[in-house]
Image 1 (cartoon, rainbow, N blue to C red):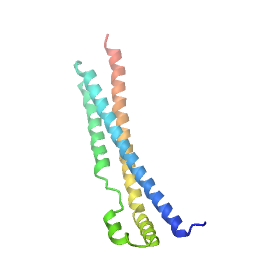
Image 2 (cartoon, rainbow, N blue to C red; image 1 turned 30 degrees about the vertical axis):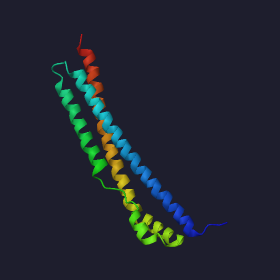
Image 3 (cartoon, rainbow, N blue to C red; image 1 turned 45 degrees about the vertical axis):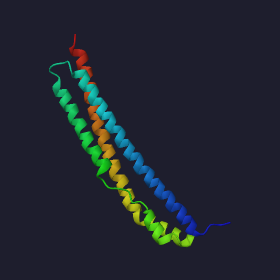
Image 4 (tube, rainbow, N blue to C red; image 1 turned 90 degrees about the horizontal axis):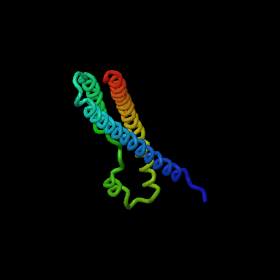
Length: 155
């Protein structure tokens, strides 16, 4: 039995929407992981440096990186926008008693209208995740460099 073009378009639209949602959620998870690593590095840095005098400039530099990670990460997770979701109330009100073809056409239209918006949201979250990753690398580099230099300065 062959599927008609509406059935195929419906399947592709739903898969595309699910893929966009999956991409956005995974980027959100990356941001959260990076922010957690930054907090952990900052805490370890504070513990290591806590009893040493004269090394606070290193900690301040690492803390500035941590602060920037948190600012960019929170912005990326909360303030870059939200995904366009299907409103179940609209589906119930308009399409609950409709034939399957009308419902499928509505889903295909919805997916087309919101594809660009969801793709742009994923792009903004990816940019935030890349900046957070870069700042996390700088913070990690400062910590490793500090430990390396500390190893040569303590008899």
